[in-house]
Image (tube, rainbow, N blue to C red; front, side, top):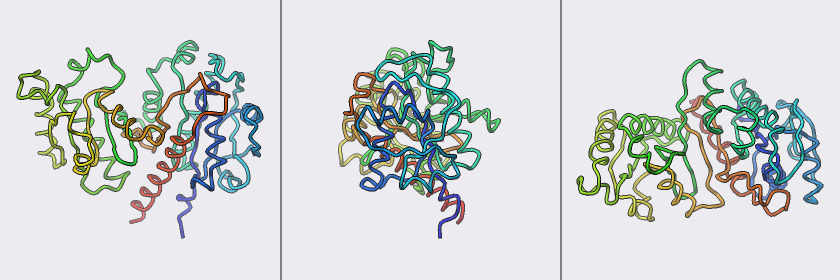
Length: 344
């Protein structure tokens, strides 16, 4: 028999309602049987979800509920936990007036998860500009989640982004910065801290007893002994030495151009990459519709589809829910692994 904790639903925040978040949430619920989607509840404005379903011609019964009752109604209706805020309904037309509801949905999902009412947080995509226009002061979604974690626990969280697909996991050490800024940002300390969090979460959240971390070089041929740049020998190799001294199975720096073929992937559990595109290009090339964004280093599980708001196709009924479905399924799997580990 499963423990009560294992029966907790997933908390799904709606994201920007002007994007594809509402319709992929609807599509994920409609695929609950055929795609093995675990029970979740959507935190949103119920009126907007009903209107979006009508626009798409989707016959979706919607039940306003609370987290404790969501799993019970999931089989017969899409459970929606209502927001206090109300949304302006404009598919493809982002509006700063929706910022309050977007943020409230994220806040509620995190609060439910840390309060024992949800097993994990799954987030639909948000866009930065409408939030910035409304006064949002965080660089992005992940940084805001780390802020909430710190508020709840009192301990500063360092979030680490991981792209997880069926064949490859990648972690970018530096993320949303210009390429010219990467060498300055790429310190030994940053590589070590990122690798520690990655190794710990792969062990405790993913259930991998001794995670293998393949560390990519920054420069072509991993610097070729300094002939193509000093960063690999000056910053990355000392980080690997420190990690191996701590008992973490990290190796490299490795030339990135030979790191992602099938034979190479068989030799590691995650590739630690030095910049955004070095990590995301192979992840998306191998699993564009199934890759999941997982945030490591938080005191709760958070997954997200690996795509943006897609304002250009919002409300047209052509958005695919594959990545959200994969995010929901992975969140459930990670929650179940955590439950089993706690019971052991």
